[in-house]
Image (cartoon, rainbow, N blue to C red; front, side):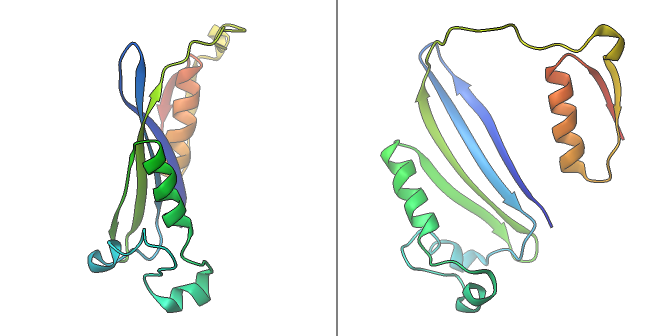
Length: 140
């Protein structure tokens, strides 16, 4: 299995940004009828899961409170047997910071690159980094 954390800019204005953060896993998944209980304190979807995987049932309740304090939203999508995606969205005030140095770029003779990995998450992550550094990337 794997866990993927992704942050994405959903929208922006001159003064604010809307950020969505998703945490996706390829675990056991959560039945639809149990998903509404996930963000309650001391609640586990399945008590046998606590013994196998640990946890007190506070993590998501605390996350929900923190996101609410930031006027955001939080949720989950899940399919039993296929894993889950937990997400939150928040609006952040844009802050202008002095730029200490220019964005790093790869030397021009290193820009055509091939990324090969059997794992699509790894392949996508490496491709994203290399493209941000100015590479022309082919992935396989």
